[in-house]
Length: 201
Image (cartoon, rainbow, N blue to C red; front, side, top):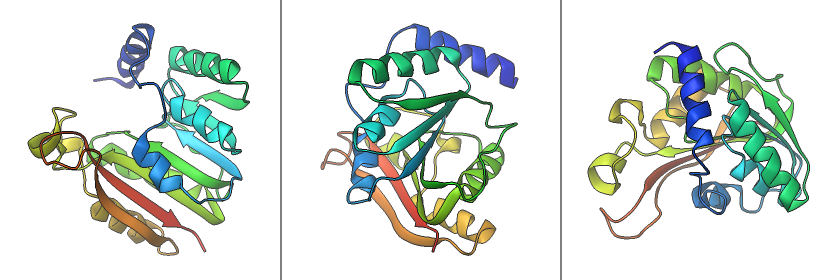
């Protein structure tokens, strides 16, 4: 599917209402626990639930997405919460964030085909400043079989796979976490996530 059509499909999805839930993703919250707020970048921010939460925690947050409808929804959330977020409309297939510029870079549930995922994730890693972290959350490859219906299994991954691929492209990165996270403790009862946290010394 052409990128322009995919963007329009996301616009339509965001027009249909907020599908991200009432609060931030709990796996992201667990991954960010204990970090000292600084500058944060969320890529593929959707309708901004996680970006607004980061701003509420004291992060100076930039949220990037290619859907103007999603960004407008996020701005409305930020206004309602009384926090400031820098909303930027960008196509991650054509744009990359400035290198070594953010204390925290977040990607949550950007389930791309592997050939597309590699460059986008590598650009995200390059944006991490010295001492900063890249935090990636996605559905683990076991999610469909053991958790819930979800994205095309070919787009899913394990935390160890993502960590290894990013270290191969940027050997300076240090793996702090590469975990399977079951958001409901019983197999088959809920989402199964992959959580990756990489730090740049």
